[in-house]
Each structure stands twice: as structure tokens, then as C-alpha cells.
Image 1 (cartoon, rainbow, N blue to C red):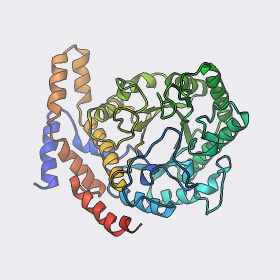
Image 2: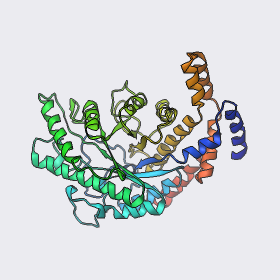
Image 3: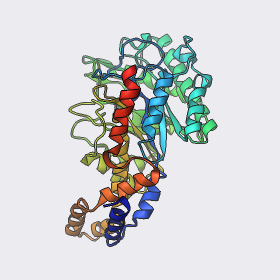
Image 4: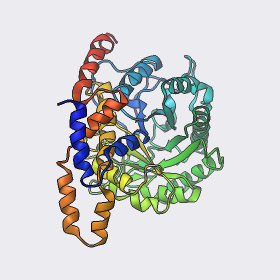
Length: 416
């Protein structure tokens, strides 16, 4: 059956429960997904060849990873042609274009990202940004913005302010607001005796970082918590409670990373609560397996639940969706493609819910009908609408993209 014929059948079935599939397709085209650059080179960046540190671990040695800025740009552009919808590219500070010169992190400037802005403009992407507070000589002992040494704290404060200014430049140049996510690895491997002192230093650092008010129309700041990291198992200085307070203090967004909470917690349950108090949120969508392992996003129940929370609440303009996974055990372009397509699939699934009908059942106390319809929706022809969306966006339908990735691997990646 052709894509069009299958879609017409699906369209009729969804119309019977009050869902306009044409509107769902057009709506999804307007919801950008920010795709992380670091999947393409295992979080190495272009600053140095030192080890990856800060509680972050990339496992696997699949051949063909990007070795320089040109290869990373080429790989992401190829992947972008397999992924439907509006896209942003999220950069870490270590992906600067330093023209072969040594640039310290507290000295990075817009000029070091001008080529990325040109690349994004040429290809219709927005850009997001991240200070890189790991894999550096001043983070070797596991502390950055909460470090007992004021000189080291000052270095990272300068780095974060410089990062905010770079993000503003990106937003100003592209006319698409950037989002700057602040995450640090600071924490204790064993049980500390002065958590308060470390958090007091961290608060002072962020007070100084956000003393520069910046251009809110061009950059949104967000702060990200974590339960624990490798080497910081006993205490994470930037806890969830710390950053909730910080976000309220400085009117920033809160970042919800799907791998940064206890195993029994889910991000889908947190979105509605935080949006009662904050104008916007940032999501970092990954797939934790037993811990914050950053596996490639799959089309699982939690991903669908996150998407449904966004769409049911009409939060698509308040929740900034970003991906955060890195897998070096499989083809990296395939990882990008699988993860990003699944995020969009989940949003499509959510857009095909008769949300008003379901809310009506709930308000009336008709939980029987709510449950019955939610379950029956699982077997509605969602895939036919997804295929039509892909066709309208000019990207491969179903698994036909995989052959293109294999050809790219054979012709390009295998020669690296």
C-alpha cells in the first residue's frame, strides 16, 4: 500500500475520534528538536586530545568517528537529511573553531564559533550552547564552580560568562534564540562533612555568572542537576533542590535530564509541576539503563509520556527539547538518526491523542472511558501518519534511511 493510501485510511480513523491528522503534521513541523553535536565524536571536541573526565564515560570503539570540525559538520548535515522537522544543533564549548591555535576556555569568544553560525544559517538550523566544565586541568579533582580555590572558581565563572555571550551572539545572528545549559560535575566520591560550604561557594559563583543580565531575547539560561556521577557517588553539589532554588533566584529555566534522577523517578511527572513556577524548561532526553548511561533514545513508554505531557498541556512553546546521548558502540550517524526520529515520533504520537476528549472523561470521573480509549489508541494507525510526515519533510520513510547510512559508512567513514 502506498504512503498516501495508508494515510487516507488513518486520517479517516483518527477523524472518527476528533483528531485532525493534517493539523498534527503541520504542528509537528514547528516543534524544534535540539540535537547534540557530541554524539558525532564521543564528546572529544577540538580543544585537545586529553581524556574524557567529569563523571562522563563513552563506551565502544566503532570506527569512523569525526576527527575535526569539517568531518563533524559533514556527518551532522548527512544525518539531518534523514531526520524530519525543525532542528537545532547543540554545541559544547570544546567544539570551538580555534583555527589550530590554543584558546583557553575563559577566553573563548564569538569569533571561535562564527563558522558554526555560518553553517547553521546555510542549513536552516538554530544553535544551542553549553559551557564545558569537564575534561580540563582545572576540573581534575572533581570541582569547578564550587572549588575551594578561588582562582579556579574565577576561571570557570569567566568561562560560563563567555559561553553566555557566545550563545547571545548565536541567537542574534540567526534570529533563533539559543539555550545555554549549565552543568558541572562537582561532587564528592565519599561522604563529605561540609556540603553547605561547597553549595555556598557554588551559589556565589552562579550569582557572579548571572550578574551579567544578558540578552534574554537571544539566549535562555538553564541549570541542570544530577543525582550522582562516576567519582562523585556520595554527594553532588548541584543537586535538584539546589538548582530549583537557583532558577527561582535568577529567573532561569530548569533542565530536566531523563537520566539524572533516582530510578523510580520519571521526568514526565516533573514537567507540569515545574511549569507552574517557571516560564520555560529545558529537556535533555537520553535513555538511562540502570544509571545515567546516555543510551540512544528509543520509542519507549517514558519517551511517549514526556511527549504527551508536553502536548496535552500545550507546553510546546515552553519546553525546549534537547537530546543528550552518546554511544560509541554503533554507527554514530545511525545513533543520531534513531534518537532524533524517535523524539519526533513520540511528539507525533502525542499530537494524535484526542486530548480534550480524554480530559473530559477525567474531569467527569469517567476513568473507565479514559483507560479504554488510551489503550485503544495504542493500536490506531499512528505509523501511517508518521510516514506521511516523513514524506512531506522529504526524508526517508520507515527503515529506508539505514541503507543510506551504510553507504555513507562504506564511502566516507571507513576511510577515516
